[in-house]
Image 1 (cartoon, rainbow, N blue to C red):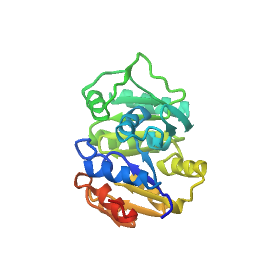
Image 2: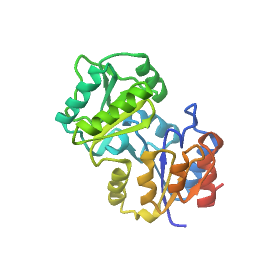
Image 3: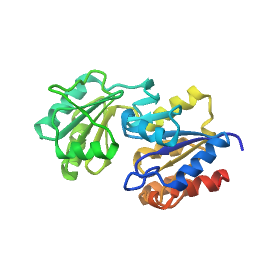
Length: 261
């Protein structure tokens, strides 16, 4: 079998619900690399929260997709990026501040916040890195803005942005998180850039994911796999359904598709 590009969502796919990489997953990914396949992580996380995972896997030289498709990088080098229009961000951020919501701004390797709140501390513990506390957020050059709020507040805020702000795409990756990127930016748009740069056919791409922001990548791929913990809607979009992230779904799927041990 010719070498494939294996694209893995991170939270809910590669990682367990308590943010671990299972031993079986490590073993199968190492076997895949040994047989000439390539691994690419694709996440809503910003680069600083992806690099520790790649280091743990011994894949720091691999390309990755970060910030919901706004960044493609290798190590600390940003190879391709999309930035949000400043005027649109100013409007969206001002509304979030009026609603007293937590605003997180991501530019390349940098994560800025103006307020150190419990929800920020929880996010920092989850992703394994710390934000920079600033007096004024730097919106110029921002790849992504993330709003952390109670689920009802997050849903209302995302709806407000969609109705009132042009030039941004608002997605609710988790019930309490709203992610803002430039309109037209997605994991799929970043994957399209990456496969063109790598001169790889999309038919040689295998995508594994569990979220709505993975569906467009699944539609592009030669083979798509939904995790067992994905919603029924996501599962309908995939070629195959594997077991849940906590049950070794990544290892099981890749072992079967690529005949790995």
